[in-house]
Length: 640
Image 1 (tube, rainbow, N blue to C red):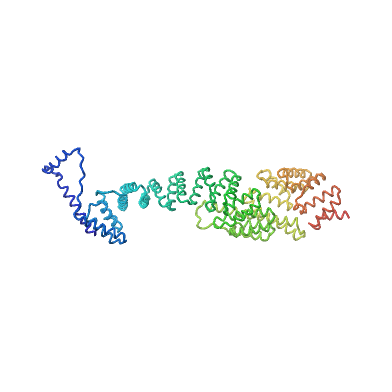
Image 2 (cartoon, rainbow, N blue to C red):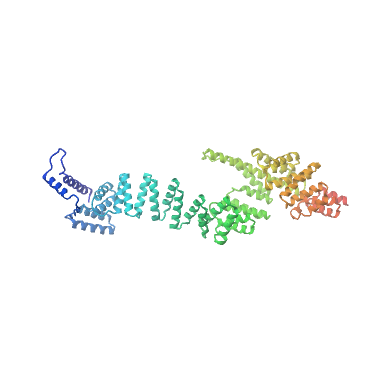
């Protein structure tokens, strides 16, 4: 039916209705006709009786309507849209009071983009008798959307969905778009809840539902949504997110139940395991986290790189070094982001290698880590070089770090003042840190030269030069970070080596009084200060104080042989030679016995006890370490 013909039909129908109403009472008070009186009498007589609905008469051209209907369906089957639309128009024209044909015509008009005509046709058809279907109501809802009539849209969408028992996916989706447009989020959440199972929890719609529930602070509803999504799709990603939310709400019983069933090796499986392990580490204990990782790895067979990596870290902390090395090596196969997993594995492997005195291996790990991090951990590489006594390489790395941080400037696009201030503070701290580690490395090389030689003038001058340069860096650090305790201790010990004793002892005294040193740092400071007083031997009071400090250090770490050596030297200074020898005889560390100081002490103690043979042997070993040692030469010359 063309637009002109269709409008012509509508005009005829309008005229028909107007004519049908022409017998109504006139507004000017004209008396009722005899026909009106007869109709009223019939109505009074039939009051209270059941009135049978009038059976509509079939239109005279019903056969033509049927024929057009059949041709329309055949055209639909062939996919001939133009012919189909033409025959549906004819069928509706031949049988204008047929509800089904009217809506079919409205549907075709809408498909052709003739929304206004489709709207008129659908409204007309909706007034006709016949079966009301969800498709018809849905068509009306969509047409009302295009007309912008919100209340009618909602009415017909709701009626259509009720009729379809909420099973019409297209209708649900169209209704959701309408609700998005009018920002009725409460109803939208309800509709998405109906729609999502039909579309297998399509990620975009699923995320939109999550966002809505977050905005509405419906935490429990979010968790229920993830439960349903995972049950329907089996998607581990959704289960992983569910675990994260359950942990956020501290619903650990449910989290443990989920994680306990995990035996897969996808990234989502290990994310769930690691999330729970990290939660235990932060809120419960490392032992609980370690037990969980062992169970998932050894019993449930989750051998992903990340689980192996974290298990290796815990094995390292618990002294299971051999297993730790195996699992950390497996962790190195982790690819992509975050690189922190790989870098963390390298850091632990470096630590293990250093503890095992495999310094070359530590350097190889540090170089590999530097390659992965893109130079972000250059300080670790520099320090590892220094431990392996590759001082030139270490200094080169420190120099490049100083140049970088001294010339660092924030990016121009950073306009947030808070972020900018934080970045500037970080840069200032980097400047301080790199100079501290640089100074520490200079001191370590100086100590090597002082203890291991060669003891010629050139190397003695080199050691002193290192210490002077280190002091410059320590002073830079302490000027910008006065509370840097480790720097204060290192600076004090360096001053002592430069024979600036009073300055050194004053700093050490202050450090111990402040009470900020803890653990190994406190033990080291007590032993260093105490031994320095003993070795300097300026007066009896200082020696006595040195003995008290060393004794306290030994109480904190009874098995440290270096501290035992310090105490033995204190006993020697106090004239308790036999006690000193007894204590020295307990020292078994082969590394300690390579130190010239050990043989200096042994030679002096044996000499004081009159044990010339033992003293001779000790001084000869001392000369092998440090040729021309004055005390050894004095004794051996005197012996001759």
